Amino acid sequence: MDTSLNYLLEKEDSSNFYDDLDDFSKVNSNLRITYIGRDGRVLYDSSEDYRKMDNHANRTEFMEAMAKGKSSNIRNSDTIGSRLYYISQKGNNILRISSEISIFKNLIIYHVLTVFLIGVIVIIVLHIFTGIFVDRIINPIKNISDNPYDISDEFIDGSYDEIQPYLIEIKRITEELENENMKLKNWNQKISEITENIKEGMLLIDEDFNINLINPSILKIFGKNKAIRSLNDLTNDKALIIKIKEALILDEEVNFDININNTDFRVYIDPIYNNDKKNLFIIFVDNTENKRGEELRREFTANVSHELKSPLTSINGYAELISSGLANEKDIKEFAKIINKEGLRLLDTIDDLLKLSKLDEGSESIEFTEINLEEVFRSISNKFLPKIIERNLLVTFDIDDIRICTNESLFIDLCTNIFENAIKYNKDNGKIKVIAKRNEDGRAYISIKDTGIGIKEENIDRIFERFYIVDKARTSSLKSTGLGLSIVKHIAQNLGYTIDVKSVYKEGTEFIIRINE
Image (cartoon, rainbow, N blue to C red; front, side, top):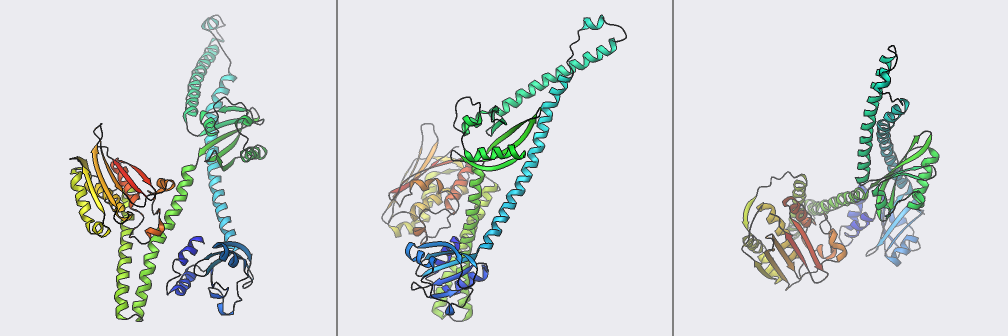
């Protein structure tokens, strides 16, 4: 709903704002849209006749939005008599979006069921794995203990002829068992080596929380560097201990997510028995990348939808005005320019997305050829010469006579994106300096440095994310898909290059491309 509010408020100054509200309401019928004047008078409502609605100046969400800029709360609607979740934000006036609580309950139930089904599948797989694991370890040991014979050849020769065949058979069996026992020891040694080196934390405890098995990864996870004999010596995390007790009491597998020392883990607890004694086998799996991946996927989907929908909405709006015959000839020309501009923006976005898709899949054939770095950058600079002159930028080159073997198309795309950003985000009358040298070890590197707006330190790690924009206020006036640096990152990975970024906020940024030939 926050995204919807921001999207609609961006259109508040448009002459077609109320039409935009109607269009949005038709697509999102489960949401109620209310537009309220600063005096509390209702100017628009997607569900009721706004002309018959009471003044909203005394509504909680209206007063909080007027005071704080934004508000959210849950209450019974005086207009429709249902319990709703409200979120409001101040623009020129107050825009409010509300939805029935039952919708959120349904979403929660859906996600809970999904997590439950995934948990059941994981439990079944884990149960099969532990069953196989236990059989491979316990059964051979049990067979050896059930046949404790040690019969020498002298004993067989000195025995009665009638029982010699039986003793020979027993000896053969014991020798086979000894061989199996040796194999089992070797297998146990391999298991031990595996548990010592795997990154997942493994823990085996009894009902009294005594530790029977622990691997080094567990010590790293909990920040311990000494031998631990009890779970209480390892951690006092209440949430973890409660889950362990739950598995002991219910005598069933328990899986859950937990954060330990600022790292997200997925924990699997499985009860196992040894001579009627209950133990718990616990595995800690680092889930940080999965959670981060889920967040990035959600952000990417939302950003793609927004980046494609915005120009399409604009194109459709102006095309509708032209087709309706309401626009005069002068307006039609202006609308056509806007439609063309938005269409080009849409094509640029789609082109960048396709380029990223090819780089992700590795479907683009990479053929290498020899190129001259100075020729490449002179060509790139000439391409942007009108913009350089318009901004009165001073571009200087300190490029040695360096030739490298690379994919020319990908390399030019990489350098062009960085050079174009140095122009876009520079200050008028600013400077751009391009340096290309070789290090003492003979490896070439390229530095593209500008005197632009710079990047805050906390944002540097995110600039290569798709659609991530550091300065949205400034970027809104520039032609940008938000994908340029993401393309740079993927090209560098495909070519085996590394890229370092140095930046001082409001002073400038330097991109350093290190070329591995």
